Length: 313
Image (cartoon, rainbow, N blue to C red; front, top):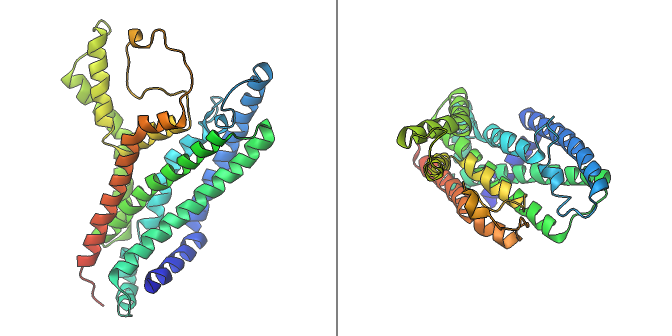
């Protein structure tokens, strides 16, 4: 335990002082503050005409005026890059410099090294997200003048927890690539390539596969269109990016009542009221558990690989 704490604090110090982390934090912070300012201006104009709106404070994080995406979109896009930047050279850099063999020659277990590095990355991600949320919340509170309710605070807390686990998945993936590849450039390019594939190309692959399996056109019956959309969505859910977007979109937007396509007759007569927090959690519980499971599996693979890896002086 003492050895893991030594590795943990050393890695936290390195992360907090690294230029790449500071640059990413500055980019996310500036983009998030600008998006919050633009969103707050539109919220203030809407409150002037409708002062009885509900969940006003959450809209600071989800609203967009068209100039910039909302704050949650910046976290979903830049969050994986933060995880990859913190972990792509966690192991192979010390291997190439020869410091890993000297570290392990001390009375220090191997599992203390990889556990300390992973937990240090998670702690750094937690500090970054909490700082951003507090800064954005302070700016939004000053601009719109509406304090958050208890349910809004709980939803923001769930948003932070889900984002930490999601970015930890990419951190674990980057550490795994750092163990598998000896060169830091190779591990970085491999991790970024997988992120690009799962985040962007998966959408095109899902659309092409769904259209090939269930061809549709403008004159297709609604049932066939729903089947095509369900298949496309099912393929896209193989990507953790889609799972995260669905989970966060439901948690921070109480008005979201379904995640799949529905027919018009299925929603006739329904009153568009926002869901309670428990109902939103029930809706995205499969997505949340899958993200947690993927994070644990990726870290477990890297853990086993590192424990069996041959390390020479």
